[in-house]
Image 1: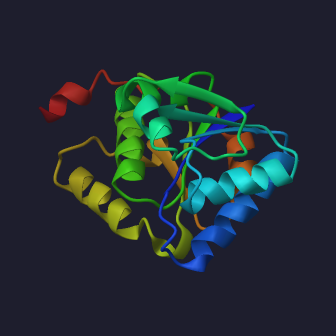
Image 2: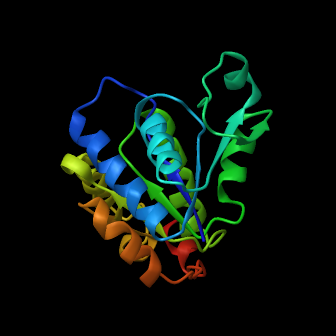
Image 3: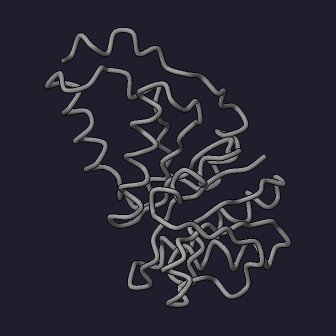
Length: 192
């Protein structure tokens, strides 16, 4: 099994985010799940890779060539794929991926999460999406998405699109219970 983890490269964040990332990484390795991530060596990306490697797990970095040229890549990760663009990178994240996990992050993480949600809502992917809501980080995001449903900008199907969890220990059991399901978009046009 393979999961893609979207997460931050910032190292300036609260220690709770690092602790949650460490716990998640250990749980993934213990379950024998391979990790695909953005390839970075700092922030939550760096912590994720450090722990997966120290626990004997498998991790693959996917990074645009320009990021490699400025040496943003994690030095301990041997398995890398380099792309020409950020768009190609996001497509590679999803190849062979059984689930997507979004940890807290900035614009890059949010953009990746939004694209995955959009693809799932349009029936283009069937990959379960897990949002790890450490410290309530995603509460405003979830409220905005619910508002979009209430205001009829989106179908009221968010409960089918993602699962929000507060604790890293809940993630692996949720993934193992998840089923790959393509959403029916035949009614999506009614909101246009």
